[in-house]
Length: 334
Image: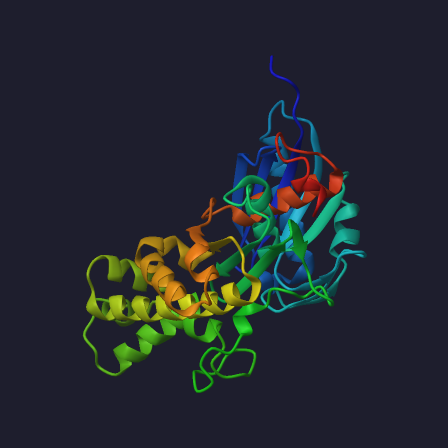
């Protein structure tokens, strides 16, 4: 018999799906589940699904009954002391007392963290970042978010809102962003931006296999564009190359400002890594200030699908004082 280990439940709450995982002290997901979010059902309906999902994953744990707590990664701004979500645009939540509601349903301590910061912390404790003190995690999905680890600790900023890197302006004359500004990074390089750019070129009459998707009245997504690009579609390749250039440009600015040893790319768009990474690295080498430009490592996330779950679990382990083997000092710093 091996020595007894402890586990936590990790939850990654997104606008379209909720991912759950039972995670051990070395960051392995030993049981997982993904369900749709259905944010239109309101906070009560979403929280009901969270409770059901947590119970299902916990039940699937079998004899792994040493579950010590729950970590939840979520988009938006929240008050960590009260466990209240102040604003989450993707969920249409305002001032939702998540911790208070879940405390009535779960007999476990709950710890909240911003989704990108949680993923960054997961990489620090369990992934590519175990040997570095300064890393930047960039989540490129529908939008773009970021998590910073500086000096081995999560950096939250004065208002607890650090990491809103998607709203850096990289092209002042660029397209209008959802925040109301023009030329924000996520308006040029996010999954939504990739799909919008491809749709605009199709509307202008450019030939592409992607037209079949439009003709079927399906929603064009970044996944469609990436798949077409990998198959050799010229328009799709052009769109992906343009997005990779903007991703590299944004990273170059962040590398110059923060001088991290490591940049980790996560989120849905990052799963097309073979299409993006060469151009991203090239642009960073050209644009970032030396010596950081030549030294920084740029890699894809250790967990393409479960980064938020592992990160949420890492936050819970840290706050509970439960330490992984070889990571004692890391998980005191959350």
